[in-house]
Image 1 (cartoon, rainbow, N blue to C red):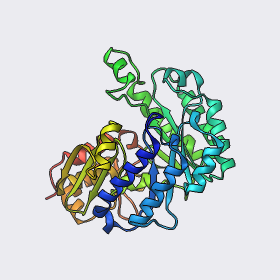
Image 2 (tube, helix red, strand yellow):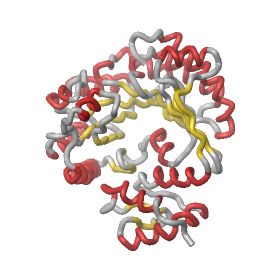
Image 3 (cartoon, helix red, strand yellow):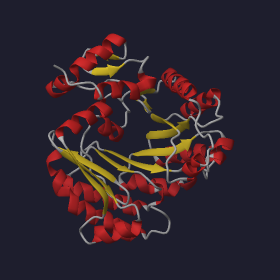
Image 4 (cartoon, rainbow, N blue to C red):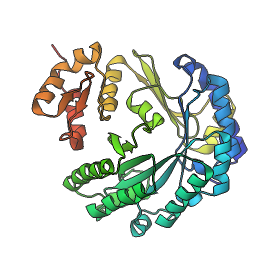
Length: 357
């Protein structure tokens, strides 16, 4: 969503897509989370956000304690807008701080500085937001570990209930992707990244913000409902340009991606046939693989049923003997602290192993 999109027309398109897609999700119960993310949703007028919240509640119901989040960039935050969001029903904000190092923010092409992040958090508190998440980024080439840890301290000093810590990723269709193709080194070496991952998690834990997933930590009891839906492999209805949606019934599933271009999205949604960039059918074996991919990201681990045991049990026992997996008191498979920086290696070892005998 950008400033050039007609807000009312986009609102109407999202509500039309909701009407078209809602029947496929009516059997999953009332939504427990509504998340306005991607692009710059913080720019959308509060009245449009409220209309979508009301639309979801009217079509699918809404849990009484539903988590309703809006992502925002610090430079876009105003107190009046945040107050409007609270009135509209939003009860949680996710602020893209990235880092408190102004030089690094400039190098990353960000439009805000650390002062703007602190002002955005202050405005959120004044607007009545008790639930606040801050996004941090680490892993840029040349970023000292001490600077990444200083970001954790600066974020925690602001008293968020949730902190997300993402390693910098290089996407093809971005300025960073173009720079990488020209041969520029943008990421820190792997050993530095692994060390940063471990020490950042320890620093968060020391401040009472406990890691519960690879990239997410929270004050106990304030884990993100929405984020957790991905890792527990629950279906999610996604609406809007470029949105990614997913459903499954335990045996088969589907995943779709909406058209990214707003004009294509608007035209299709308003016609009652949302424009999709892609759609993928997911079979039972792939669903099992994806349950492993998602569930092992959680510190509490992956709940094991007969299907997972039959497919991965022997490999899991081998990884446990090697010290990479443990079985929790609840019978979950969880990656050990020592192996967590190398999660991809553990997951691949499971996925590539022959089925249990």
